[in-house]
Length: 396
Length: 63
Image 1 (cartoon, rainbow over the protein chains, first blue to last red):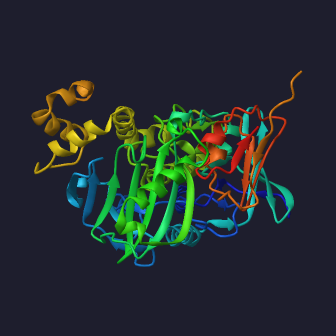
Image 2 (cartoon, rainbow over the protein chains, first blue to last red; image 1 turned 90 degrees about the vertical axis):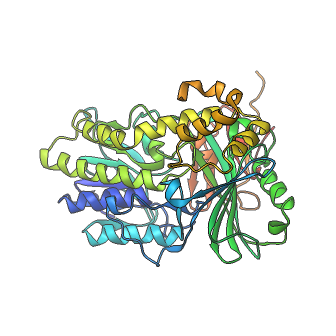
Image 3 (cartoon, rainbow over the protein chains, first blue to last red; image 1 turned 120 degrees about the vertical axis):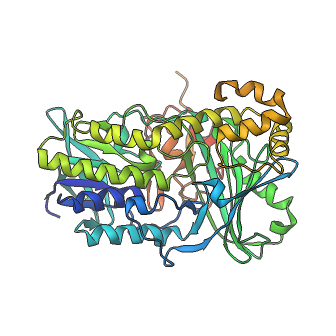
């Protein structure tokens, strides 16, 4: 393999990477995207629930090639299984489609390729090249051959287990409390409801939740995330999910046909996502919503901005940290307030005993929420259980 | 000097599901995930056991 040169090098071909690559190419930059796996989008490591309000903004056309179904809303179950039903249009961004993630990722890569992006599969970055205080490329491995790829602008889109961010000295490190460890089964012959994504809160999943995302009639992704700081024994995460399933006859009778796992960051927004010659996007930049665990929308929204700034940096012949502030500022303007607010809410929620979750869901019974937001929920709870909201005064 | 404890990552696939949870949380960046293989750098690893807790299926042991 010969050494390569390009304008923009994107490391990782998930949604954030493909989106960044697509927009960089669309803006005229010569763009190469590398992916360490042999197949984009596979293996899937995702619950596959996705909001939809943002898709048009970043130029993604909904397609039956990757949408399994559209849900009407979400149901949130308290520990004593009182249910809060949230209609999709009230839930705003948090529910929408259940998708076929591998098909979705492939479609985004196709969109990028159609804009002129070059794609190299089975190509892993193994370290960063530096020159005069700047990052100027990577050493890569492709079918066992080592070579260099040089580019003035590098994009770290290498996901939750990002190496690029760490190599660049960016503050991606997570504490035990900043991560949920997750496992999920695809189950058939279950009593899921194709109209709803379901969420179960409380000690069934400490510091996280159990989710049921319907894929088709009788078929659903049944998964769990648990905060790592709340785990005590090896394989606790699997134990929690197996226990939940055993206690729910509508799922205990089901059959598992697939299993996936993974880590989800639930941290406060990163302080810095750019360095000289490099930008981080998506899960690699800890852009996952710390309350919902959703990462696709934020990754794509940030990816579009990163792609545009990358192309501008190429044109200006300036990929300094200062120039790339346009990306830092751009993604923060769109995402940071909500990430921070949801992080604060999550920090509080993970401390609540089951009885408080029950009271919160109970207080919301029959309440018509104009818009699902932390503030609106707290106001509704305040009317019925003022003592519960005392601890939340900072939000009100 | 007491010898370091041994970290054992079961990465043959009998337990490991190659999810990358341990890779993302390792504070020293010494665990690596290829498509179907997890490895770690014995020399860098301090046996902090964070990965042991983060593994959803119990594929990592220390002792």
